[in-house]
Length: 273
Image 1 (spheres, rainbow, N blue to C red):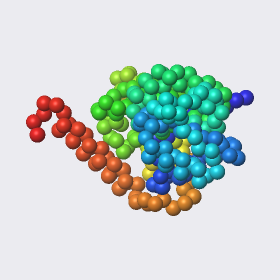
Image 2: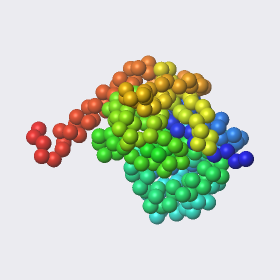
Image 3: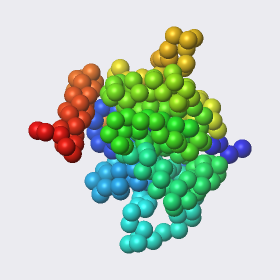
Image 4: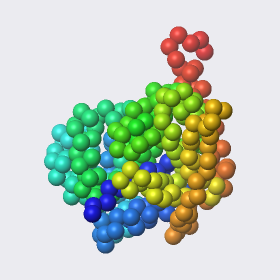
C-alpha cells in the first residue's frame, strides 16, 4: 500500500546552524532511496536565488539529486509541472508568505498536482509557510500582524510555526483556537518536525536542545491548553557553525522580530516621525 506522508517543520534552513543538518539527514532517511531526487518549491519567498543556492549546496553534498521548480521563472525555464513533480522522491516547500503560497499554487493548479504527488507516495516536506499550508489553517505573518490563513486541508486541524520564537504569533494562535477561528492543532518550534502518515500524526522530532512540538487543544472552558509532545531527538552529524545556546538564539530572534515590527510601524503612511 502506498504511504502518503507529510513532514511539517516549524523552522528550518539549509545552513549549519544548530539542528538544520540533522533535519536534512532526517529527510533523506525518510526518503528511503539510495539516491533520492528532492525538489525545492521556493514559491513562498519569491524563489530567491540565495535560498536556492543553499538548498543545492546542502543536498548536493548528501548524494541526492537536488532540483528546483521556480514558478516565477517558468517563462525562462518552462517545465511540465506534473511530470517533474511526480518524478521526485521528496518535494520540499520552503517558507515565506503562506497567503502568497496558497494563492500562487492555486493559480498554477499546483495544489492539485501536489495532492496527486502525495497520493502517489512522494514524501512532502515543508517548513514554516510550507508546513502550515497542508493543514486546514495556520497563523501567517504575511501582512504584518499575525492573522489566520486557510491551508489546503490535506491534514486535519491547524498549525503554528516558530512557536516560541515569535510570541505574538503564538498568542494569536491560542486566541484563534479559543474563538473557534481555527481547529485545535500543533505548535512547532524551530528545528522540530511532525510526521504524518495519511492524516495521522505518527512521530515528532526535535533537532535542537529545548525545542519541542506542542499539542494545542480547546481545554475545558478555561482557555486553550498546550501539551508538550515527546519528540525523537535527531542529531547533527557535523558540529554546527553557530553553536550558541538555543535560548540565546531564540531571544535574539524575538528581539529582532520586535524591532522590525517597530520600524514597520514608524514607516506607516501618515505617522509623524
